[in-house]
Amino acid sequence: MGFILLLLYSLLAPLIAALYAVFFLLSPRRSLMKSLGGEVRERLGLGEPAEGPRPVWIHAASLGEVKAVSKLAPELAKAFNAPLLFTSSTASGRAEASKLGEARLAPLDFYPCADSFIGRRRPLMLVVAETEIWPATLYAAARAGVPVFMVNARISQKTFSLYRALWPLTRLAFSGVKQVLAQTAADAGRFRLLAGLEGRVTETGNLKHDLLGVSAAGQDKVREFLEASDWHGCPVFTAGSTHPAEEPVIIEAWLEARKKVSNLKLVLVPRHPERLSESEAALRKASAAYLRWSSPVVHYGSDCLLVDEMGLLQAFYAVSDVCFVGGTLDDTGGHNLLEPALFAKPSLFGPNYRNARHAGDALIKGKGGFLAETAPQLAEILTSLLTDRAAMTAAQLNSSKVLASLQGATARTMAVITEALR
Image 1 (cartoon, one colour):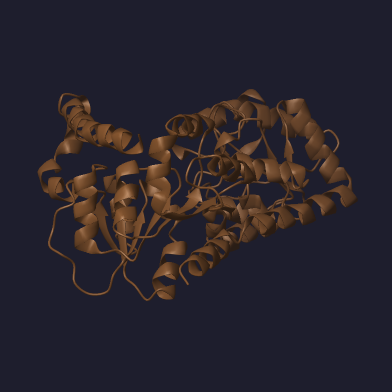
Image 2: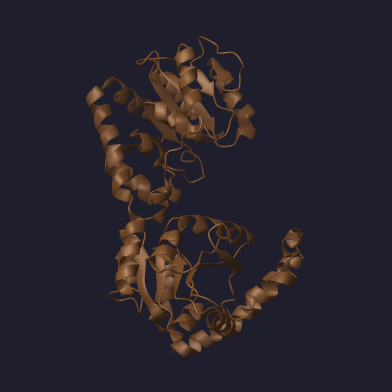
């Protein structure tokens, strides 16, 4: 049954690819197809047989997945003394991957194409990033004796249900998988219930958390501003990566908190500087005295700083007492909730943090982050932290502990892969 399903899938794959090509050619986005002719050979898995050492083949579908494995990839190359060969499904992913090693567009998930590619490149292993489950490619790797590792793996409930229903195909596709290295316990639990993966799933954490690092950009300028203005010694509340719909709520909460913390300053760092006029309109509506970061003169008596320059968010997080992470009070889904923890700062955020669910849940559970849905709730948490030294100290310590507990996925992933290939 599994082979029949794989055959049907393989017959459908070229048809689906052709339909996508027709769709783009007939749509306003047809400019994306300009290089189609030059990409056909890569999509078909064609090319000259490779010479030299067998590569570590990493498939990362798009830009985000390539970035996720950007720390792991060089460590794999070093550990196995092998070159890196990346495949990606998008041009932007391929461009990013080319900074790390050889990069190509991924062959079509059609058994003859995948088999041809594997036969020509002779990969030492296949490392698949995040959500990519390509049955034909995985089966071709298994037939060729290429060990497969699914890293930073995650699977939604919907995808899990589909693959569980197609269990004969799933068992066949996963026959060459050595280990699934899942991001979270929930992901690991779902993978363990899929046919063919019994005893081959490990929770290793999110590789992206290991990419977090402190940037020195702008820190000197920010400190100079604080020393030169009347902000020196005042508590600072930085709201980073904010969106227009969130800013009135943040401003209202800040003004409410100032009733008990009179010298509290607000730093507003919009996600999109081109929409700064909307931020200014919200500040003017609230009658809040503010100045722009780019202002040539340091104004006294301004309690809010509107940052209109890119690359300064970490510098302001570093000098703040409490931070708010944007994209969580609107429909965006949240930005980097862990970034304030780099500086042992407690994070506040809204209820919509689906893009960083695991990190947000960990921060809340570890009491290094706090959820607020309304301006009064935000003001209450902010006031509580700023007026209770013990609460603030505990939140700072907890923030650092949560970050430390979420990091280390790269080392854990390397350990599992190395052990599996001994």
